[in-house]
Amino acid sequence: MSREFAIGIDIGGTKVAGGVVDAAGSVIHRARRDTPDRSKSPSVVERTIVEVVAELIQVTGPDTVAAVGIGAAGFVATDRATVVFAPHLSWRHEPLQAALQKRVSLPIFVDNDANAAVWAEWKFGAAQGQTHVMMITLGTGIGGGILINGQVQRGQFGIAGEFGHMQVVPGGHRCECGNRGCWEQYASGNALVREAHSLLSANSPMASDLLDSVGGVVENLTGPLITQAAREGDPTACELLAEIGNWLGVGIANLAAAFDPGMFVIGGGVSAAGELLLAPARETFKRQLTGRGYRPEALIVAAMLGNDAGLIGAADLARFSVEQGV
Ligand SMILES: [Zn+2]
Image 1 (spheres, protein in one colour):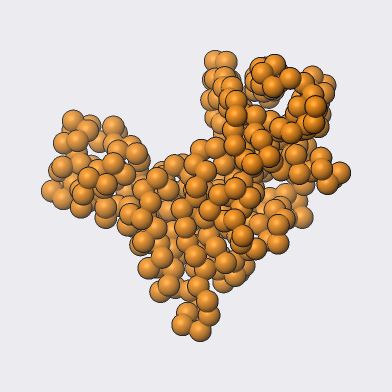
Image 2 (tube, helix red, strand yellow):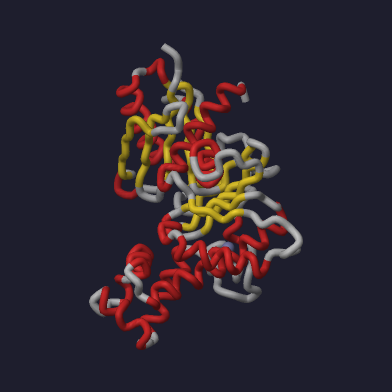
């Protein structure tokens, strides 16, 4: 039997999600474990990954899987073996591949989750047929992936694509990274929620419907609830999303000045807002693009693969690496 499948693993803050992915990018089996006791320790997460891989191999049979790809939020060294730094896991220079390879007898590759996502969207999703693609994932922060001429660009040290920490406002909001004014402080899920909470806390009459929708408890207003309210026509929720979209457009114009891609793919949880976010982003992008009026404009589109992009991309990148012998 040929090794027609690859296994993709998505490591989140509190869970390990895995899937068997076929050559067409479809997830044909899934397995998922919460990390025990919400532990972030490397050995507990590694043990959980091994369990998920074992469960998936049991379903498909051991001889059908070509490789295992792991997508992690964090800096992954260019060896695709070492997690240099993962902000949401207590990992520092963690030799993840070596630790797993002792217990999994398949080739294993580690990637940054947004690098995996841009690969998946290029091969199977919104960016098929493109040559210069940039992925922007809007979650609590901002992740980024760069793909040029069919190759994920990881940088000299593996850390390319950390778009969220480009400064857009000198002296602006403090960021987790220690700097001020980072893009992700203005165009992420956290930024959306922060702005909404500050508006509600100010007892602004324009936010009274939103406040009523969470029973008057400001802290209960989440990003998905804002998106839902905007979809139902709440003007304040629409305005909050448009503000995030404007900041998204500012950063995209900066990225276009540096990289000149043909397409920006917007993924992550916040992208569920769709055109409520993307239309204002396009407007600002057009206003701020360097050389506007004298150059082609990149497309700004929604991602297609949703939460599965990291898993599918990690699996397919691992399979590709085995096929290429790299
Ligand atoms: Zn930052």
